[in-house]
Image 1: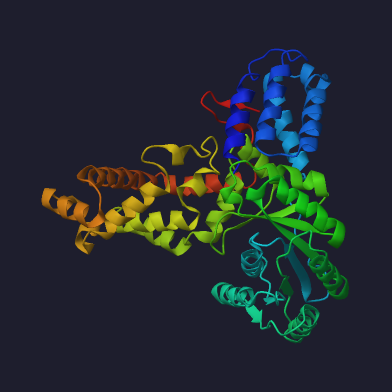
Image 2 (image 1 turned 90 degrees about the vertical axis):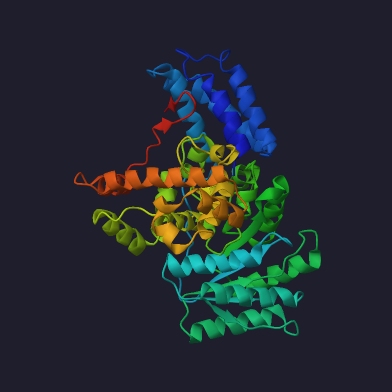
Length: 463
């Protein structure tokens, strides 16, 4: 997400970082480029105007003129204003009420609402340790009810059955009674997707909202529809008094216009982003972290939190113990590391959060997730003995492995070289100096103080 905007802004801001003094004249071109970059990212015109005006006012004011490095202070101002336009801080769900806390989910047809219900249920169950029940009141599409039932089973949360013969109001009231009886902490109600121009459907959800009085009313928008998503959110907010927005399919949106416009236009915060099709592909929306991603500073805090949730600590401990015993890092271990990386969203998902990396890895000839899948195919074409003892892989074995994996001998050689390099690195990190432990402590320290003071680019910009 934000690849196009990030590239444009990073390039534009390089032009001002070395300036000894900022004036209205010498930032004119930069502000024009910032404006163009935002408009091309499909950010609402009113948002762009306010954003650029605030930057201009601050850039030629006392705040910058008294700075030791005006150019870098300008970049810092852009960063601060990006945070401001997206909402300053993460707005968490308000669940402070007599259980069950009812969350009403609304959205347009095809926005990814039902999938978002399951993702949110899984999030609440795993992150907040809540007992969750979900129910569908989409009586117009029986397949939606079945889809939610299937997803609920996948993520391990309770599903309250409903059918197309019932009325949405009756289903919702029955589900609330059942959730209360079973002492559930949260009940998430999935409504029918609707068009905001459909008066009858809008009246139905308005009446439902008034009857059940949900503590949270979340609007799910498809990030890839840009300004259409923002306009729909505004209409729904006028009708329902939304408490927040979930930005679905954000991983497929290279522009990011919806993320930068929703808060300003509706006054409602983005609370979550859907970053993939899997049920665990949901991230809390932190404006400060998103602003850092846009400016190429990365998002180490989110990466660490994701690693804590998704990586298998027991496996990591076993690998460390194995290496300390001198057994080495073999191809079985390599394959396991690849699988764990994939669980965090693949190479693109990880690199997007690394400072200075952005989408660059995916653009390399042999980079990106494609290379991951290729390496996995190669290792899967080996015998268990070859995986545990890579040194026995000779020319004839390489031919067989290449044939079985649909790759070339050069690909096999490249993988074996990478495995050797990783093995050497692992030995060094697990040695007497405790390099691996130091690295982990360093990462943990990032949670206390994220390095937003750096903006790595080709030349490396500092805030």
